[in-house]
Image (cartoon, rainbow over all chains, first blue to last red; front, side, top):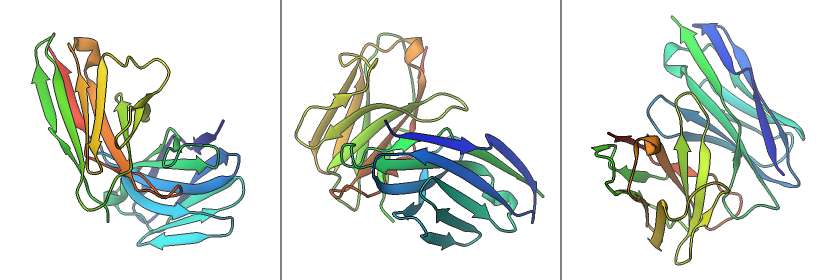
Length: 112
Length: 116
């Protein structure tokens, strides 16, 4: 059974204070690892897909990296508008097409 | 990016009422759609997976007769909460993915359901 563990559960940063969110996973054959951002009262918004160890993706202040056991979401010089819950999900070879296993998320708060 | 529209955003109704929620993929063919339930400050709980033209697959513990799912076309899935009661009050979110196995899900903005 695929498993995803995200840490920390909550992270409070000052504006401009860079940090990283962790997503540890176990899966029998990785099809893809996904990062999402969820704002309160909204559905998750897709950010990145990573397919293989060593791969990196960037978007504005966010950078996602992947190893065989974990993924990091690096946030560089965050702004208050980056405050949200960040979800990690994996899709394994043994699952039905499109079905993902989600972590519980990291709630990021960036103070001005 | 891919757009999924969910309607309505808010529903408030009396106990015993049936409520239908629509989920549409606006710019891609969604071979698979998912329905989630989310409680405050908790993660997504998958309720069911639906494939176009076939019966939905429900997760363990989810009542099939309570939560009716129809995926009649490649762009539309509906969730009907039958004879809703206050304990069914929650945030319901749909998502859609395309035909390839390693594609992300694209989510609607959710429906806040309040049963009085």
